[in-house]
Length: 194
Image (cartoon, rainbow, N blue to C red; front, side, top):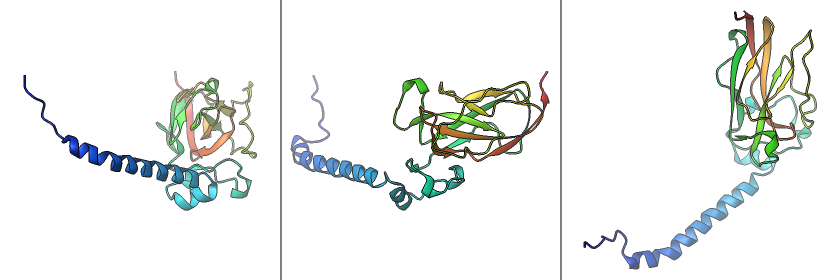
């Protein structure tokens, strides 16, 4: 039987253990302090320069915000369509979010998660602190707010011919928006597919 070769001698491990423990505690404390400091909007602005403000709701001024400003790269975006695209209805729309997780409404309040909504031919809601409304299409118009409360990340949109604006808005389990949205894009629906 061959003896196993020791990569680290026992004496080195015994002498290094207290230093490694102290280093890991110091790193942990620094991470906690950094998280606490960035938990307020002012601190987030001061400590994080990577927030893409063009992708975050800009129609509501800072004094009206009551929810925490997202820290880091958190944005919603369309995966397979872009501004100016021409499509035939119904068309597939895939969407994603960075910096957050996607979870169904039924899962409840899970920190750092939410679900997507598509605003169709609608501006940002006037009251961003209120839940995104539900509407039902009638024979004369299409639905303006599409909710994806099951955690979906794609859908088929069936829109009438013409130009339509689309924007993603990411919200919590109560449909209250985070300050995470896509830029508004315009697509032109040519006609129905056969």
